[in-house]
Length: 463
Image (cartoon, rainbow, N blue to C red; front, side, top):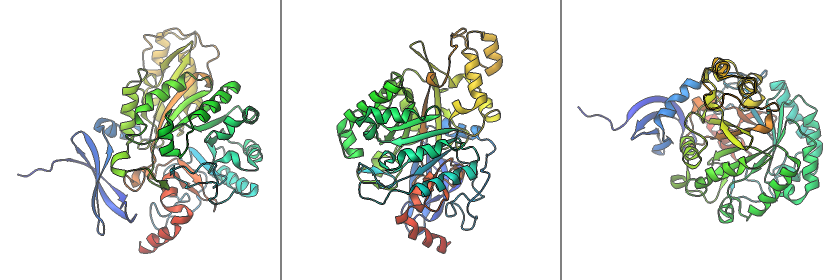
């Protein structure tokens, strides 16, 4: 009897990458890879690699937990996901991280930009508009976990510091500024002023490569010296910073380990976030067949290119396990010790909130601190985390804090090629749009930006 060359695993809804209509999709295993098979009546069949690690992909389901919803929803469920974003009551996750785009303008015109920003595109939001956007987040979340001030390039907004002042007056647990670092590199005084907003304040610094030729492909400019100067200034004031790497297969994916090792040596760097390029917005130097890279490929390259992490150190994040993976390490006494392997997954699923910043979670932070305190024995650590600290029974860490923790995050934003409605319903990284609706990052860039609204309306009308 004939057999298929793949193993059928699951079913979901996806999008046609050409017309963005909803289509049925199979999830199948073939040759140790995970593929999505789908068919559009108008544009035919497509086959998309969504993971190169079958066991990891299956393990994702073990990291699911009850959703935490916002206190308020902003739109009705009418046309069905993903055509009702705002958030609608059918969405399954609150905003772990909410992005505020305070300007469309940027001091770069990057060939890769999900927002299509440039020095001439769009406009700055007024201070009153931005305040309303921030207020909307607080209405939905009461005490938002993380709010990221972004753009365009937010540091060029004429009222940038007034916006930070207002954001810090709100009950936001952790505030970030997403920046290309140009203004930070220009002025130590500017950097010192940023540092006045600490604690619970962080710079999310664009850092794609050490190679200026690669940076010209992604950013259209030679920026390596600017990044070096920005980090020099940030180190001087020890302002918490995350390096953010937009990844393209065959371009800069061979630098993952080098960037992580570099970050570990910098006083101000608290972690590295690795973001596969989302096929949305401006992608001038991107070949879908050659440059797409999956979350599991990035995870594998972390393990191959560093000597610090093993397979138990980079695990799915429960708030959105399909799109997020994370590992933690402790920087102490010149040594780097992976931590994630010491946390039983049950502790993440049963004892922690749905958030992508675990060091802000009191339960997990308490566990990490207790394990690495001088009074903790192997037996006590074993009882606490169900894991033996056989090689680190005593570590003197009386001042263990945020400065000692280092995180690696893989943040994979789906696009029309690998869109999975199950996963997008769990999206926890959201953007406040101009209408003060809170929209998942993935669908914002596919449907809800100004130049795409006409197409969205047509899809809604077609049902």
